[in-house]
Image 1 (cartoon, rainbow, N blue to C red):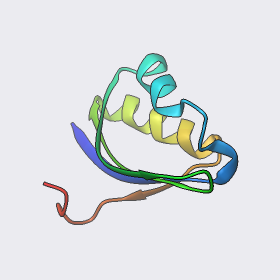
Image 2: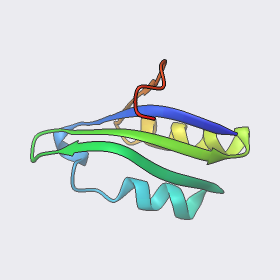
Image 3: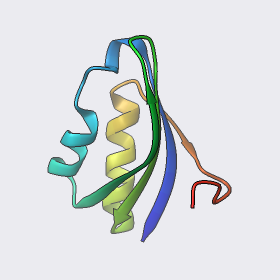
Image 4: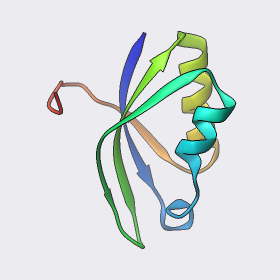
Length: 78
């Protein structure tokens, strides 16, 4: 299963390697489709590939670490 989401990192989390940790902790493949990072905010369009349960765990990890997660409704990054 593949799921595409937008991640909005708050200033406090911009420098944390959360994508790295998600790839190590859960059985998902992370594919950054688009990103814009500054010292104040991080915006990432991310594709997660894996079993639905693992994807849900990865999303929960982001949320638990203060990252706003929103589904990508349209395939505008294809």
